[in-house]
Structure formats: C-alpha cells, structure tokens
Length: 380
Image 1 (tube, rainbow, N blue to C red):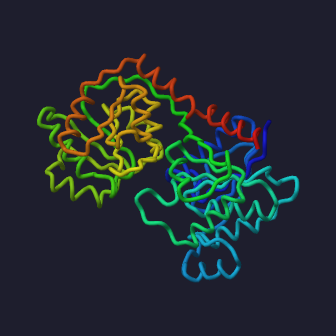
Image 2 (image 1 turned 45 degrees about the vertical axis):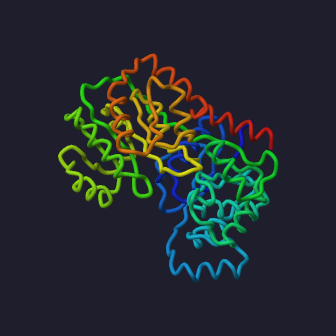
C-alpha cells in the first residue's frame, strides 16, 4: 500500500548519506509512494516529481554552538550542530491533508534524526530513524553521556531504526537499547546507472572518494609502487580525494608521474568505465561494520575490484560472492597489497561473470529496497 513518507535529510543528495537518501527517495517515488522532503539550503534539489513536495530551510547561523547547546538544554530539546535548522523544520505548519503517515530521519548528520523526531512529536506521527554509521563509530571514544542519552530518547520514540548491514546492527546493540524487531537492515540503494562491458588494454586503476586518515593511503601507494616493478605502465587515479593529504605522500614516494588526483564528481560512471580496476581501502580495525557507498556502484559495473579490508568485513563478504570479478586483501602489508594488484591485473572476468555479480545485487536495487520498506510498513 502506498504511503505518504516524510523524509528528513540535512544534506539531501550531497555526500554519501545524502546521495543514498536521494536514491531511496527516487525508489520510493517509483514504487508509488508520496514524499514530503524536509531539507536544508545545503541540499542538492534536482529531483522533480508530482508526488514530491520539498520544504527547505536555512542552516545559518550555526555559531556560536556553545550558545545553541545551552538553548537546547533550556528548551529540553536535543543538542546538535544544526540547531537552528532543526527548530525551523519543526516549526513548519502542515495542514492535516499534507501530514505524512510517518517521518523518517536519515543520518548522517545526526541533526536529520533530531528534526524528524521533533516533527513526529509535534504531529503525533510514527518515527523511523536511519543510522548510516553506528553511534559511536568503532574504535572511537564514546560521545558525551548527554548525546547518547538524547539518542536513546529518540530511539525509544521510533518504530523502526534502520542500518546498512547486519554487522552494524550487531555492533549498535552494544550501546543502545532496542525493542525486539526495531533494528532492521536496509541496504544502500544502488544507482540506476547503466554500465556496459568495455574491456580496456591498460592498467589504470581508480579509487573514488575520500581516503584521509585513518584509511592507510600510504600503504595503498606503497603497494602500487611495488606493483610498478612488474607493470611499469600501470597508473592510479584518485577521484574526489583530498589533494592536501595525498599530494605530499605521492611526492615523497616518487609517484607524481603515475598517480593523478582528480576533482570530485557526482557522476562517477565515466571514471568507472575507463578503469582497468576499482579500489576500496578500509580502516584496519575491528569490528569492521561499513559498506562503502562506492562499493555498491563498483559492484554494478563491469569492472574488477580490489579491496583492502579486514577479513569477514561487509566489504569482504560482498566481494567473496563473486571471486571471478573481485578480490580482497586482508593482510595490511605492502607485499600483500602488491600481490593483490598483481592478481587484479590478471583477472579477466567475462560478461557472464559480471551478469552473475549484478544479479546477486537484487537486495540493493531500488526495487529490492522499496520492497523491504513495503514489508516494514506492513509489519508496523
């Protein structure tokens, strides 16, 4: 049954979670749902649809944040770094006919959860929350007690809390209390980009997105440099990575002639299709709980994939579904990574291999994620 869903996202269609939320919104619209989008002036608003209505409010000023935290405490509200935006969203007047059946806050940033919580409270509607990352992130210190207490308050108000994979669900349960069946897996929504089988006659590898610490960029570059001893014509491109972090490493290792840093692009299909191989680099920490959005894009392409990731991570599990089209390196050493590059260079997947990989991505497809939402709506 089609529903009217209020999607709350500060950075809609921007940065990883905003892009995932935009894909989810398109999938829900295609499935026949009506969407009210509550977002900010930082959002990218390219979507147009007769069943989509957008409410946009300013985020500025965001300072002085100490004062805004004090104001939140005085008002008994939830502290966050977009305090004025959350208050402006919560004050939007919605007539009965325009009220969503539920409000779904999509974090990160955390403020998306807060604004959805305030709307659900004001209009007495069900609340859903999405944690794109766990709270706290693995191997980081626990946030202030007040932050976790406020988060627990919002969780207790929510009917559903979604996360991107089972590893995140298991980890999150260590820090917050959930009702039975409340915490659910909802995968990233895959893009609708249509890729084609396009073999290349070069060894140009591509890494999409950020690779700042604690991801081991130096190790990746050292492994690639060793790979050059056997494949001197190989090249490496970073697309959308921080040049201030990477450029000194590239220079120090003498790789400036064979490694390029290209600007961010919201349409990475061209870089993917021109690549000989696609790269993922994960932090060498446990528990490993992340499913990078770039990996979902990679898995829908006709390109082989190399990931540096802990054994048994969500990335490792996904790549081991199709060993003919991708591989994981689980040992964080230069020699192991160089050997991974050698294996990647030798992979020659067929169109059938890629078709099987893509067929196995049904749970990430817009239709698959929409069906999971429909199931949750029926159950709740």
